[in-house]
Length: 416
Ligand code: EPU
Image (cartoon, rainbow, N blue to C red):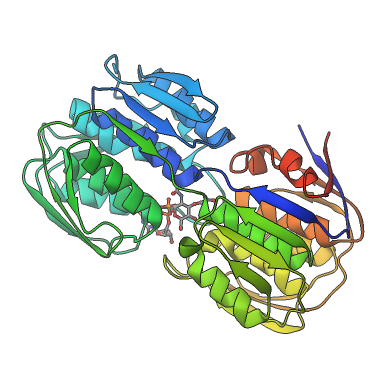
């Protein structure tokens, strides 16, 4: 198993480029199953979660060809199965994104409860209730769900909980359904808007994506299409936090600052020194004061940036309360941050208080999920001495060749 060995405590300098968004790429690949014509997707990061989704799609009969450095062509004419491979699906939550397109293509889909990051309970009731409201029948056979519907019918559906992949799945299901579907209390994340843009370019009729109200007028079929995946806002945000926490001079390029409003406004309040360009953010050294953060669906403070921000709070003056509202398992990793010297009080699974600034000490930690893995990396770069991060597969799931990119801005990091 690969690990990262990091010697921290250095200031970093230079430019780092942001890749395409994992969570946009995953849903666009899944959506390509809705058409029998070829789809070309560009700006795809070379990461483990994408490779897992490719394997799942190939097992269903899709042909995926790499046609450029980060460009792929997907052909689904030979799609021949409605069974989502259990071994792979249990490792990746995004496997659930294949359910709606398979329902659209075959009128049936069989799949296990999806796996992925262990960050809390991740039910799929909203997907099931949504499909049911559109006329689907759901059976549970052993460990598998089986959903059938000869053709889904347009419906009105209100999400009980805001879910990104749930919103994306019902958009995809409604695209080939008969009649009009109205979705309420939808996720407003940029990835949802990007998906709707792609599907509309293939002939779908989706209005309102990016707002809580989305209307989809079902069509009989879609044509193929071309799509460029949006820049990864979580990767960009993680790099900004890394730069601020290590008090470095770093320019983050190829990002979409407009997707990071909540983070940038929190950083401004904490006293971080940075300037925002059209597609870049330049970070300069600063003195930080602690602030409180509360995670919230987009456009609020992203849960995916909560862990890196906790590290930043260990380097800020004063006390900051972190309130994780979306997942009950996303603060447990801070036990290891405490072992690195952080002053953290855990009130309950959703709330912690961090006092700073504290000098972090290098040590060994296990990466439990993608975002906590990135947070350990940032902590290790802030810390004095040597740190080892095990289970870097978790980091590779979401960040392409991270050690090579960090070395270019002066980080002392090796993969062993
Ligand atoms: N929820 C339900 N019922 C459902 C679905 C979700 O109650 O049927 C609740 C969950 O319990 C949770 C909230 O809704 O409280 C959102 O959870 P969900 O697991 O549905 O999130 P998601 O849509 O699967 C996406 C991203 C996550 C990101 C969240 C929140 C993808 C592939 N994943 O997950 O990304 O944390 O939205 O913004 O788009 C990551 O990239 O590291 C990651 C975990």
